[in-house]
Each structure stands twice: as structure tokens, then as C-alpha cells.
Length: 372
Image (cartoon, rainbow, N blue to C red):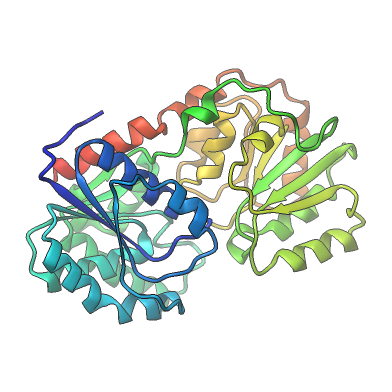
């Protein structure tokens, strides 16, 4: 792994500690940078979040945590109200590098860095598509202006796939030379280790979904698709919490799936579910590079996904047993789950996930920032 002079320091900005892959990766990076010899500060804008305990457990003791506010409000309010607090903290710390953890942190991180009058290199990170097909003209125009400003003020912008980098070069040609593809550190050694963990649902074929119950994830679509799956011996398991969980449970009941659908909640270590799942299904409207897909591949679990992230086709279509569904109808998703259930598994799924190991991802981020 890349090492560094221990006098160099990195500040990572993050909104809150939640279940999402973005926050998990931020914590993993903070610990990885500390192990590589950097002085690391994780700057959290507001207290709260639905996974504070599990996320804190990922953070190395050498990482300093700075909490800007104990209030937890809507994200936009949290960010705006703590802009000056963030700038003041950056001025005090005078870091060598500032890394924004996600799309929604990019503009506030650039603004705080400018106000702080520190000489840090600023690295932004894109974690979801910035300009999406469903964006209306006004929203597209506003987002284009905000991110164009942020990208041009940053020293480097880290993107999660070559496909995403090509998209962004088209949308933001003035920032094209500052875009750099990095591997996100998702895949842990434990995910790649052979294990004899018992199945949470012994004797059942499992279609697995993982994520927060919110509109973006479209678990309602997954449940409707599962109702059409030909093999009625399969069991659908969705891990996570969120505001739409009760609504999804009601939908499963209305479709007569009470005995075939389980929603165990948020699981800190879902390894046993991935290992014993026959199919991992992703039905999101949009994603950046979803950690759940890489976690499934690391466990040799075939993936059926909507065409919801830029690298979906490049990553999944070469792999036997994996499918990209477009258009994302319940009939089409059910058809591809049926195909995947009857396809021989690809022994090489793990190798596709290896690029995203913790070691590779942390080294990539360090190299990109040092080269900025």
C-alpha cells in the first residue's frame, strides 16, 4: 500500500453516519489513510444517523472525529448551517488534503475550503449520477451549474468507473482533465474468505435485496417481480430499514407472499446472506457504483440488476449468470431472475470484485490525491 510522511494530514467531510455505502466507505478510507501514515480527521456535519454504532466500529482509533453540530435536521439545513463551522475547523487544522465523501458534500466542501483560506488540495468524489435522465430542464441546469463550479475549483474529482468518467467528461468538459477513476474500497478479506457460515434460511433458495427502504431502491418493484418468479420454492429476503418498509411489507402481504418474503432489518454483517443467496437483485432507479453488487460478486453470488449505474453493463454482462435488465419492468426482472436461477454459476465472480478490495481502493485514493 502507498505510504506517506506522517506529517501529512487529510480531512474527510461527511454528513452523518448512516446505513449507506457512501458512509461506510468514508469510514473505511479514514482508517486506511491512518494506517498508511496520514493524520486523519473525519469531519461529521451533524450527529445522528441510523448506523452510528456500526460505522464507528469501522473507524481506527488513530482517526480524529470532529462533530460540527449535535443537531440533526434536513441535509440541506445541516450543510448550510455548518458551512462556517467547517471553514473554521479547516482553518484551524490546515490539512494537506480535503476529501469530500459524496455528491451531496462536494459543493459545501469546496465552499468551506475557499472560506478557510487553507492551502489544501481539494479532492471531490462522485457517488451517484449527477445528471440523470429523469431530471427536468430546470433541475438539470441548476445541478450542472453547481457541480461545474465545484469541479473547476477542485484539484481532482474521483469517479467510480470509466463509464461514469466518460459521462462526466461529456457534461463537464472544462473539468475533464481533473477526473480520475478510482476503485472504491468495498471488498473486505472476510468477504473473500471461504466460510462455513450457516444459512439464515436453511434449505431455501434465496433472492436477496439489500438497502434502505426508500424510493430510489424500488423494493416495491422487486416484490412485484418476485411475485412473478416461476420457481415458487424461492424466498425473497430484503435487508435494511427505512421509511417505506411497512409499505413494502403490506405489498408483499397483498400479493400473497407473506410466507415467502422476509425483511429482517439492518444487518451489520450480511456475509451469511450473500454467501447462501442464489441471486442478488438490485432494482434501484439510480446508483453510483453500488457496494452491494460488489459484495455479492465477492461472495460468488450472481447479480440481476436494473441498468441503474454507469458501469452496470461493463461490470456484469461479461459474467455468466449475471444480467442487466432494461427496461426495468416487473415482468422483465422476473424473467431474468428465472434465467439466473437456472444458469450455471460463474466461478470467476470473485475476481471481478477483487479490484475493489480495501487495499486497492485505499491505495487508489491516496495515489489520486498525491498526484493532484
